[in-house]
Length: 118
Image 1: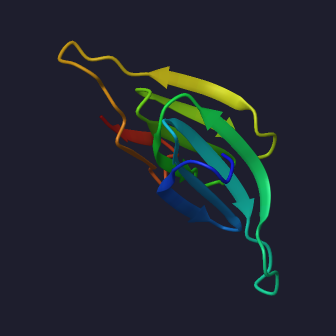
Image 2: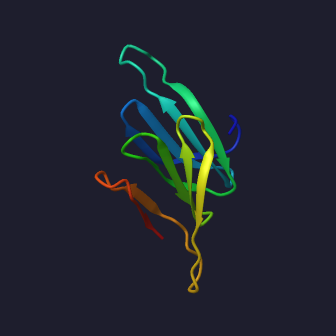
């Protein structure tokens, strides 16, 4: 997203030295991953940036900080590698009762399972 238009951050999550934020910009979505580095560093370093076709409502870093779950208005959860930035898996949600927007998700610390709320 550029300086023009409307941007809204809808989700921020930090685990260890990594922070992820997701939101929307003029109808499409975005995710940015930063390394928070040392406390003495004034500006976090951007590691990855991904564009999505729809707004992002939830971002979560896995307990081992290897993956990032991204979910939202596109009715899916995408998993990205935080090392390479590559998309490694997508789960599409469908409902017979209407849209299955993914509002929230979170990782179980002990098992690494991902819980999703539609």
